[in-house]
Image 1 (cartoon, rainbow, N blue to C red):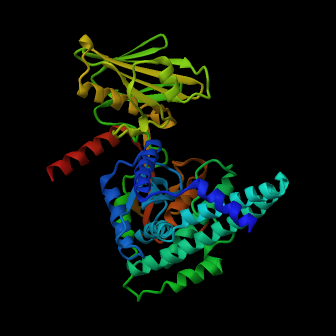
Image 2: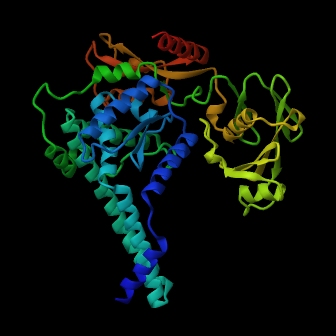
Image 3: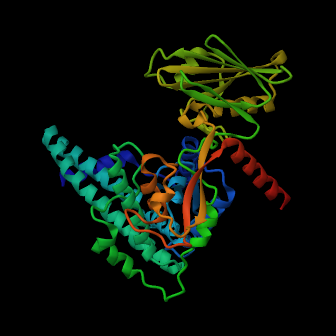
Amino acid sequence: MRAALTILFLLCVFGSTSALAQATKAQKLHYQIISQTPLYDDPELAQYVDQIGQKLVRNSKTPDTKYGFYVLDDPGINAFTPGHGLIYINRGLINFMTSEGQLAAVLAHEIAHNTERHLSRRKSAQLWNWLAAAAGTILTGNRGVGQAIGLSNQARINSFGRELELEADQWGAEYMYQSNYDPQEMLGMLSVLKDQERFRDLQSLQDGGDATYHGVFSSHPRSDKRLQEVVRKAGALPPGESFRGREAIREMLDGVVYGANYTGNKVDGYERFVHKSLGVTFLYPEDWQQTIKGSKIILKDPAQTVQLKLEVEKTADKSMSSKQILKRKYPDDLSQVKPIIEIKNKQLAKDYGTTARRSQQRVAAITVGRNTFHFQGIARNNQLTQAQDDQFQDIIGSFRRASRQDLPPKELKVIYYKRLEPGETFASLAADKQLGTFTEETLRLINGYYPNGEAEPGTWMKLVRSRSLAEQEQELAEQGSQKTAG
C-alpha cells in the first residue's frame, strides 16, 4: 500500500498534458525536425509520398486523424514518427526501394506506431520503471535496491520495444491489405533493410553512422516465423488485385539525389555564409553586401539603410542560457524577448538562441560550442521598420551549425534507369566504381539483388551517375518554369 501511494504521489508531480499543449508540441516538433534536417526539394515526390500515406490512413483504425508525411533530405536509411500524426522518411531510404508497395510498407508501419499509441506506451513503461526504482530507493533508503529494480525493468522495456515493432508490422500489414497493397511487401521491405544491415557489417561500419531503421530481428525477415505469421494474418489479395507500383516509383526516383545532397541547403534569393573555423552558417539576401572586420561580420542592404552586425565571443559562463546572456548584455531595455524557434520562417536555427527588440534595434544571442554569437540590427536614422525587423529575424533564424553539405563540391550523384543489355552483369555495371569500392554491392542493394543473383536482359536497372551542380540547378530551374507554365 505504501509503495502504491508513493508511486501515485510521483505521478501527480508529473501532471498531465492538455490536448492544446499536445497540438502546440506537434507544431514545434515539426519545426525542430525540419530545421535540423531540411525537407527534400522535390514537390512531386513529396506529393507522391503524402498521397500514399493518406490512402493508408483512410484504411487505418483512425481514418479521421490528421497526418502529415514528409521526405527529409537525409541520405540515411531511416523513417520515424515522433507521434502527433507526424511521419518522416529519409530520401536515403526511398533510394533503396524498388516498388511503391515497399514505400507503403514503411509508411503503414509508422502509421501503426501512431494508431497503437506506441510512443506514449513506451514512455509510460519508462516512467513506471523510473517510479519503481525511485520508490524502491525511498522505501528502503538503499540506492542500490532502486538501481537493481531499474536494471531489471529496463530489460523488460527492451523486450517490450521489440513487441511494439512487431505490432506495428502487424497493423501496418493490415492497413496495406485494406489499401490494396500486398502485405508481403512488408517482408520485402524488411528484407531490404536486413540486407542493408549485412552490407554495413561487410563495410565494418561503427555505430554512429546512418541510423538503422527497424532492426529488431536477429534473423532474416524471410525466415522469421512470428513476422511471417502477423503478415499472413493481414490477408492475401487475389492475383492481379494487389498494386506493386514498380513503374510508379521508378518515375519518382529518376533524377533523385543519391547520397549527400550538396544543393539541399541552397535557397533561392539568398547567399549562404559559411565560417569554416567557427563551424557556423546563415543565409542573407543575395543582393546584400557582406564584410568581415576582425571578429565581426557586417551585412548591409544595397541602399545602405540597414546593417546587421554579428560578433563572436567566448562563452564566459556555459551554465547561462542564451536568454540570460542576452539580458546580461542588455540589462535594462529589452522587449519582446522570445526563443528563436518561434520565429516563423523557413530556416529555423538548429542551435536555438534568444532574440529581442531593444528600442529601435533587433538583437539576439546564440551559443554554439564554446562561442556566443551576438546579433545587432540597426536602421538609418534609428528608425527600424517592421519589414526591416522581419528581415533581420529571417537572417538570425537561419543561423545554425555548418555541415559538410554547406560546402558543395562540383558535382553530386543522382539516380537514373536503363534497361539491362544482354551480357551485362552487376560486375560490369560497377566497373566505373561510381560508388567507390563497394559499387557492385550497392547496385545490388538498390535493385533488390543483394548479395547475389543477376537480372534478366531487358530489366530496368537503377544506376547512379555524377551530375554537375550547374546541370542540376538548370534542371531544377526548367522544372520550376514548366510547373509555372502549367
